[in-house]
Amino acid sequence: MVLQKYVVLDIEGTVCAISFVKDVLFPYFLKALPDILSLHFSSSPPPDLQLYIDAFPPTVRTSYDSLYMYIRDLTIADKKIPELKALQGYVWRKGYEVGELKAPLFPDVYKVLDIWTGANCFTKSKRSVFIYSSGSVDAQILLFAHTEQGDLTKGIQGYFDTVRAGLKTDPASYVRITNQIGDDVDPREILFLSDNVNEIVAAKEAGWEAYLVERPGNAPLSEEDRKAHKVIQNFESLI
Ligand SMILES: CSCCC(=O)C(=O)COP(=O)(O)O
Image (cartoon, rainbow, N blue to C red; front, side):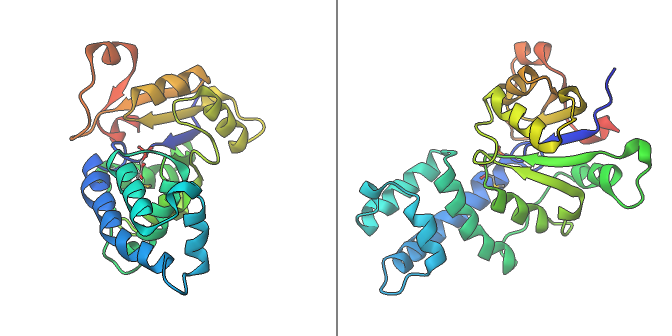
């Protein structure tokens, strides 16, 4: 039996409700988008914004309307593509910094993160915690820095997104993360928690231990999923 010294957490549907992303973060982004694009097409666009916009295909960057519709449609379809995720993080930064956005993590997440990584944690309970999400690394750090219970980033050892690691449904991404966590890390020492069964399957193929997380508001799990994978409803069952 191998002890899982490392825990890798998905975000949406695992540490916070899907509704925070779909009903709060995405609408915030869509509301800000017209102003952001007007700024980009103005006579003095901010240079940092230019970099984010330049990542979109040249054919859609030709006018405000085509770029607006392209980005809006990608957001509504919840496309997990890096240029969209990077721009979303850019827009959410202001929302978090002015206090308009705060991430409501599930109560057990705060409690268990403290047990795993807090200053008072016993050696036996200690875990190194990492995040792996389709949201950009910048957006992940913002979220954990602005939770309803304050800044949790001190307890998190590292962040992975699809740019750093690859697609979450590809076993090779989990192999890349294993190597980035440390040269001598045995994949069996890593526990992955996610609400997405395809991600759990990919992580297991890379040799990780992986549990499905069932939270209120998530898509229902099939009987087959429940038979094939360990399912948890609360991180407290891990301590
Ligand atoms: C941390 S960014 C907000 C969530 C997000 O944009 C997203 O795509 C969530 O993806 P996940 O892989 O965490 O389900």
